[in-house]
Image (tube, rainbow over all chains, first blue to last red):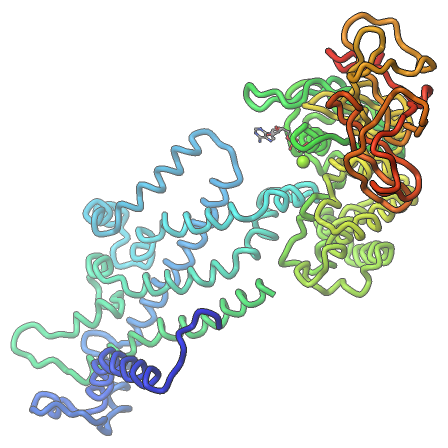
Length: 281
Length: 350
Ligand SMILES: Nc1ncnc2c1ncn2[C@@H]1O[C@H](COP(=O)(O)OP(=O)(O)O)[C@@H](O)[C@H]1O
Ligand SMILES: [Mg+2]
């Protein structure tokens, strides 16, 4: 490839050493967590910290998944999945539709609405959390999936992304569809949506992880352990008072919490790289 | 049987008027070419016929029915766009079939009609491909297929050939003409290329700055251009326009040949003469100083000025000539029957 730095023996070795060192630093805590999730409680609390995996893998994970500390981890995984999917899909649907409206329709106060959406960029969940909580509480949506998902669903960022993409679609395509007799929603579903599929895939990955990693909001509105999501659930596993934390189970839970985002990235990456390659051919 | 008529159609964008009242009647099965320089409003006019652009004033009628407020679909028109505007994610088959699908045509009929159309356009082998896997010419054909498959009553083309290379353009030009003849569908074709216009159109509409300069057959436009603009726009190389002063003198003082009919007109005159209507006449006192020769094969274009002035002139001589094979200064004769007179101030034909 043009412009690439010339390879020579020493350079290659140095850069590899640097990279491996960097990876080691990043991976070491994760490795420790894996080790901690395969040993017994007593191995952890008595120094030195074990550095090699123990033989209690199945036992610890079974305990975490099926009984957990307050609530079985599988239940929290289900909650998190529903919330993350709801947020990701909801955000994509809403931002696709609002970008469609902004780009393709002339309606009164169009610019005004555009700037209103823009403004919400400056208001992350944390800033509007008190009034939002109030509203959700008054609607009786505490401890519900609707309450978890709804306040996080509007997305100025995604709307902008789709707006930018729609503006690159030649006007002539929309006009050709119109001449072919497609009504606006037909055009949206038959043409715009399939053309946006790589953007949707990329955005889904980002938004799923965003939804999965929500901490503050679920913490506020779920009081019933049955509704806990896993990211906040881990925190709830630390006992108050003098009880000892059940480290192997907590570590197993932490690793389980990482798994779905990793799977989504791996799976969706294949999908959208395929899309990108296809589009360039 | 489809006729189109425009009645004093105008278009403004805000305060900017881009179409200043166009009236024209297009007969059944006619192939009309709208031609004019870039930015003169050709696309705007076409898009108003298509229903993609609001009509500010006037009426567009298709088959005698005012269609000003009908959607493109309900005007039963089909349009071919400059950049083809194919749906990139659909196969060639789906691209062609899309309008039929929307019209809820049965699967079997869609299949049959798409196949027929593909055959007509030699696209049979490409039906499963995506547009990006096609060459420019093939994409152009798909765009045509999309228009034909619906059996519309009007075809509209907006510079459909301008993205093709020269050879393909000539080929597609013939193909479009052949198809239009074969299908007998009333067509309006927009182009800025006068050669394309001359070869394709049954009638030409020359548009300049949102006004119709002239509407007529290619031969009429060539033989009797109504203004200096049309005279220079139609025909290649374009017509020489030479200012003529009192006593019918050319800029170098030479008196134009007495056989040239001269109009009775006061005010500034211009003489229009096409390069192919000038002959060499050694004895003539219209002297021509040669500066450059362009050999086109069948003929040679000689560029130069009238001797004693700076008025440029182009002469087309049959056969091959070079600067060396010609004298530096030659005498010219303007074919009297092919001289055009214009009022310099208004540009109108006299
Ligand atoms: N949406 C628009 N808003 C304002 N002016 C426009 C718009 N579309 C076209 N125009 C103007 O109208 C004139 C004619 O444009 P167009 O019909 O596209 O020309 P052509 O197709 O002959 O090149 C141009 O001067 C162009 O700038
Ligand atoms: Mg145009």
